[in-house]
Image: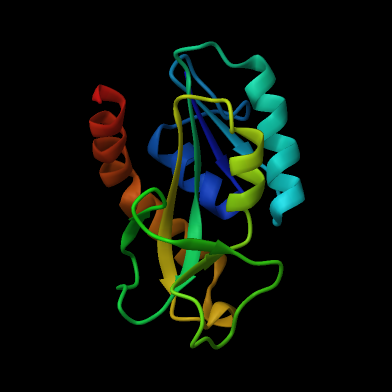
Length: 158
């Protein structure tokens, strides 16, 4: 089973639409969970999933993030290859951060003993979070799903 945990309903809706999931938000291959925004919400939701996981299951945190202008809007970011800073509040301007989100630390704490755990973020803005609509966030995630699947297959083979 692949568990995908998103902070926002609009992020999760991209997976629900892509895989044509019903109200249960799962099928025999994938389950979608909405944690809510913030580290603690993510840690709590992820911890509940980890308790149910089998050893060969995979767990992902997928969502949008802010980034500096060296990243393109819509670019898929593998957190294992880039420094992602988890912040408590939205970042509107920054000379300090490269990539920011609000949930990754909670996910990492809850999955510290899980072999198949990954964080994939999609750049939604250049530190202008107020400009992001739910539909735009959903479209960014939807457009990245095939790339996430390709990356995931590469990682699981290793």
